[in-house]
Length: 265
Ligand code: F6R
View 1 (spheres, rainbow, N blue to C red):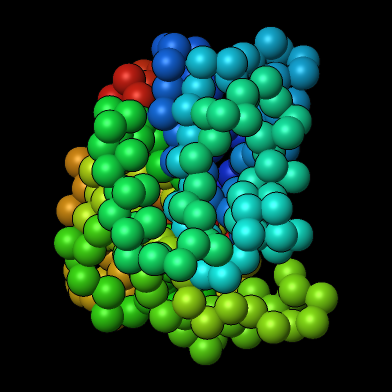
View 2: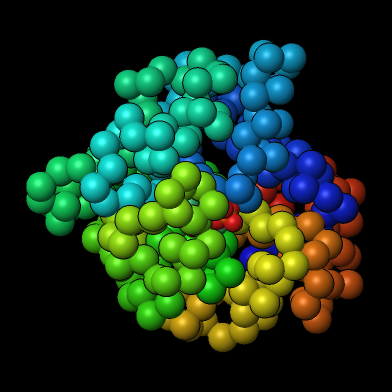
């Protein structure tokens, strides 16, 4: 893993946007988009670069990570609506190029299979943006998820439903979701995880420095060929090898290496 330590959420967003921009400028990129609070500063920075630095998304295709079961795409709290509000509607990414699992179908298992196949048919994801749950989940792969899982129906953990209740006016978070599996996420060419805040510090420690274990699903990124983890000081506060990550980052900066062109871990 390449661990990048930043001073603030804004700094995290800039570093993450640098990596995404590399892929977008290379042309015909396939982006994997997370929702939730963690990628907000990354999306803000990409929107700014679109407006001020002519970063164009017209040939980009995008797949979201997950969706709540039972919510129609146009529901206020669906991840389809959320990713449009947070990112897609502010850039020139054509709406027909935005793919999200559909949560309001009668056969959720078939929808999960269809979605997984659609990612493959698009040639796979170039760069998958990820947040991490306080319980170590990525996507909605809750603890004990198979490290080889594909896109599927998943029961949300009580802690995740409590964490996300803030987004629902009635506090009622659906109990089921569709999520890309850990095996699906692992196939992205670059996995780019951003984390901020002290409530993520223990999960970040387990992901980066703990054993690979379904108990912390994000630890599967240790098996990824190119996983980049970008952290603010609070999220990084429990890491024991921080000095080493800083030295590696200084080396990359000195050599002008980005994650896509092959930064060193
Ligand atoms: C969202 C997702 C989740 C979140 C995670 C962190 O699409 O898949 O894994 O990234 O729950 O959520 P925030 O960023 O709101 O703390």
